[in-house]
Structures are given as C-alpha cells and as structure tokens.
Amino acid sequence: MRFVIDDDVLGLVESIAGFFERRGDRRAITEATRDSDAADRQRWQALCEMGVPLLRLPEPDGVGAGLLEATAVAERFGAVLLPEPGVAALVLAPLWANHPGAGDLLDTLCAGSRVTTLSAFGDIAVSPSGEITGRARIFDDGISDAAAVLAHDEYTGGSALAVFDMAVLGRACGGPVLDPTRPLTEIAPAGVEPLAILRLCGEDAERIRKEFVILSAAELVGGMEQVLRDTVEFVKTRTQFGRPVGSFQAVKHQLADAYALTEQGRALVQFAALSIADDPQDLVGSLARWVPRSAITVFETAIHLHGAMGFSWEVDVHLYLRRALVLRTVLSRYAATPTARAV
Image 1 (cartoon, rainbow, N blue to C red):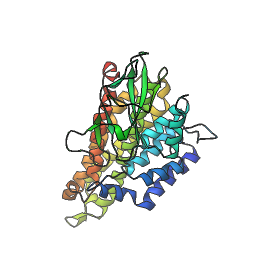
Image 2: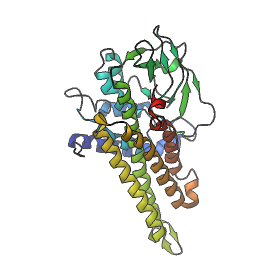
Image 3: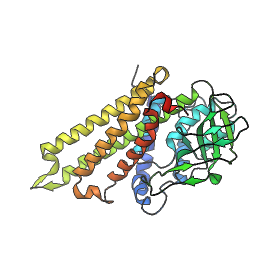
Image 4: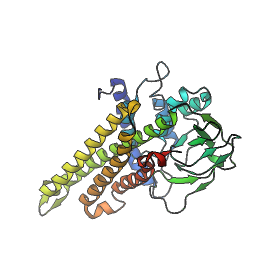
C-alpha cells in the first residue's frame, strides 16, 4: 500500500490551489455568504476546464487517477469552503463512465454545462412503474442544474440513481441555514419526472456512499489545515502582556493538538481511500464519526485562540465550524448501524 500521489495529480492540485488564490475565492466565498449565494457558475466552469470531473476517468479521455488522488483535490475544495458540488463530480464521473445509460449525463457533467449535486443518504424509493416516493437532503448551492439521488429500486430490490432537474424540485429548508456557504435542504420529488433512472449493479450503491464519506472527510481535513495555518499566523502577531500570544506554552500545546488531529485525519482518509475495495465498512464508518468530530475540535480551538474576533464575522473560522457541524449530521447516516444505513 503506497501513500504516494502521482506527480501529474499533484500538479493539478497545485493549479487548483493557485487558481483559488489568484481569484481570491476564499475571501469572495466568505463575503458572499452575508448577502447572497456563495456559489459561482464561472468558477465551477473553470474547474471543469482544468479537468476536475475528468480526474478519475481512465486515460486517454481522463487523468486516470484513483480515489487517493481525489482526496488531495477535495482537500483544496475544503480549504476555501468551495460551495459548488466538487465531491459529487468526483464520485459521479467514474460511475457514469461505466454505466451504459449515462453517456449524456457524463458529457454534461464533465463539460460543466449541467452542474450536478448528489444525495448519498436518503429515503427515496423508485417503484416498478417509475413512481418516486420519499425524501432526501441535498446541498442546494444555488447553481446546480440537477440532483442525483441514491434510491431503493423496488423492482429489483437493489439500488438506483435517480437524477432530477433542480428547476422542478420542491424544496423545504425548514428554518435558518446553518452553513450559508453550502445550504442543506430537503427535497420531496414525489410526482416529479426524473431526467434519468439508472439501475446500479452489485456494490455500486455502497461504493457511492463510501466515496462520498471519504471525499467529504477530505474536504474537512483541507479546512482543518487551512484554519490551523491561519491561527498560527494570528498568534504570531497578536500580543498580550507584551508578548506574542503564540509564545505561551498553553497556546503552543493547543496548536500541537490541532496539528496532530489534522494529520491523523489525513492519514485516516488516505488509508480509507486505498483500502475501499476490501473495507468491511468499519473503517469508513469510523471515518464518518472521527473526522467531523476532530474537525469541530480544531475549529473550536481556533475560534478561542482568535479571542473575541473568533466569535465575529471578521474572522471566517466560524464558517468552517458550520461546515463541519453540517457534515457531521450528513455523514452520521453512514456511521450508524448497517440496518440504518440501508436506503
């Protein structure tokens, strides 16, 4: 087992990080949350042109990378709190590339002309006649054109992926939004004609869930690393009692603990990505519990080390905490018992 990422993919990761930095996307996203949607169709189009959806497709059409490499890309998404459905694209593209009925869906996803979000955990069912029942939660970024929802196929007893046009889906937010960078909303697609119903083979549904958990956890690791860097820089310059705050041993210990949690999270994510094929569900289930909990600890530590500023909109650490709290809720569906995980 080799924890080594291909040089070509590292180049793509660096290009994505540089792209975000040149555009000032992190600041733009955090400022947009105050009065408008944070998602940007032009930014997502540019990421598609850079080859993000093609990352896990086989050569020569794709990059030929694996899930391990995809975690490195997802970390860059998490570092800037990317609102667009980057994780969904990394999960759906290789699945659709191997499905005989998903050619158009794959083409529009990779081209960026149909932005598609994903719900891997819900209570949606597809009847033998094609009728849709149940509810699911999706990340409603404001620019997605379609929603791919994992569903129970009552005809085969297996699973299916139902794809809906977002323009005709009814939403029920049900109150204030916790994460304004990427709102979580509930959909009830009963009576809505899907764009496609793709019946899945074998372990495809379970693999979708696992990959969604692993890549979402990678996003959190990227956020943990970014917030830790910001906090270290802050305590170097913030003075108290005539000394930089970071010179106090109590502060150093908290930062060391946060660093340890970040690196442990990255190691767990990478190990899960490498062993996904023979994972007995215990590892990914542990990941779904452990990484969000560790991320929340790191972000809460960062808020406190920023002092009073950490509790204000002046510092964006609270947005990372909000993202982690939402993902803890979403990923807890996988961390539950096998019976509760079943769609």
